[in-house]
Length: 54
Ligand SMILES: [Zn+2]
Ligand SMILES: [Zn+2]
Image (cartoon, rainbow, N blue to C red; front, side, top):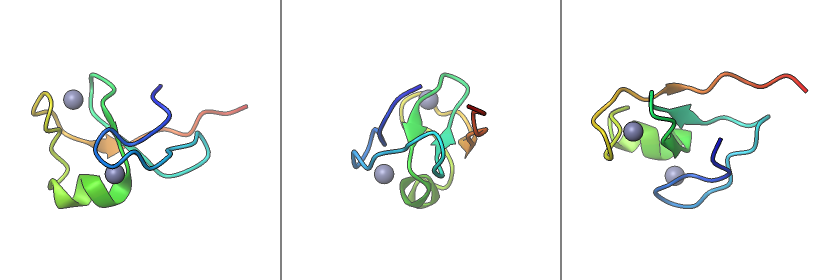
């Protein structure tokens, strides 16, 4: 679980919004949208990250 967007370094806390690919590359929603929900590292689809229950 990465703590920040890999593109713009915006923090992506557990309780906040984030997008991940199947290899757990992590991006903030605005970057994911700008990249059309496609991971630039592996070409995978970026999906909303499930929120982890504490
Ligand atoms: Zn970002
Ligand atoms: Zn990826």
